[in-house]
Image (cartoon, rainbow, N blue to C red; front, side, top):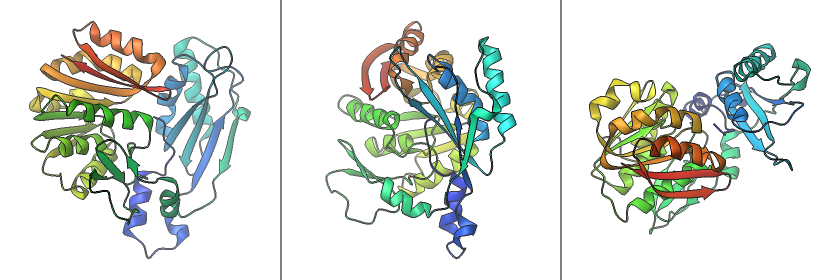
Length: 325
């Protein structure tokens, strides 16, 4: 996913051990630019991102919008010096799977060590509070007064994906806000919970709800639990790590009247039958993490199963969908 923040464990370490020196605390981060000698378009950038996410703390995709269509660049951030041979190997695996030739030699992979910095100060300067129609989303670095007419939601901006500033997260939150006008939910599922921001937003908007929050990354579950406690909603959210809808807890707590899934287009398409199985009749699903040009494919996969589109929002290059069973 698109993200360029320091990893969760290092940020948590910064908070817990404030007596250590900067060299002990600030992560040894490197940036890695993949200078492909060809245009990256279609679903290829997303597939490269998925293949590389295990060798980086973040993968950043940027669309340069070539005159003949999309032209994406791929940049990684790694903790410690990057393994160039492994990165090149993974690119080759994608190329073989797609039966294409990707023009990228090891010399086209450019690395640079980032200067050490005080990430807490960096967060304070670069992640100001976010206001939506109903929420005031802020980090622990924010100490000023909070608006009394908005619901406070505290999320540390330097943790797992989902602090509110990315278009996909904001799109999901605005979709939830829209649903408050006509729905009252009791049992929710946040699939791919990341920081837990959507699970927390569900409880803030519908205080009687119970939410199951799932992520394949155990670190995200730790962060979700911490954020839930930070926002005094930990008794309402049960977070667990596992393989998506295959996690036994998901079936155990089904059916759900609201499901949020801010993931990626291809996993959303693959998971469509599983979503249908756990969504109760009349229930709603909010899907994001997809580019606007991927809307038709994602929508088609769900409409074939009988889900209907309620609302589609375009946020920059991204899209958020509300579907109903």
